[in-house]
Length: 99
Image (cartoon, rainbow, N blue to C red; front, side):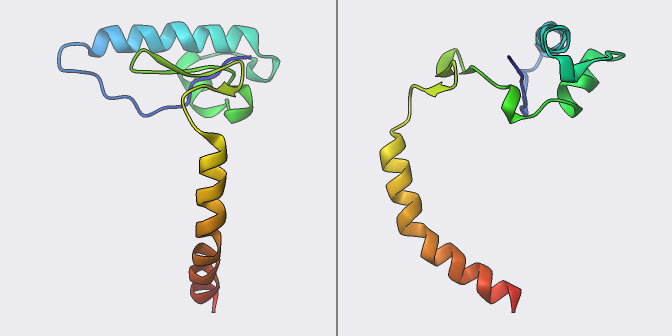
């Protein structure tokens, strides 16, 4: 299972290389996932038909940040604690907006 969902900025002069890399990934995604078939345009399929559930690994700037659905570069417990601390503030703001 493998999917790419991203906003990618290519350095000036590297647009064609980036496009080819995306086509290669899109073709891999499209040919290996039953929910991606039929494939008429690999880039369209990768951009519009794939979801986070298809992601198993993520590489950012050459660094593997998720492999086989395991986050490698983040302290999950710290993130959970931060979210738990911020949740009441977020919910207060949400309730205020919904009035």
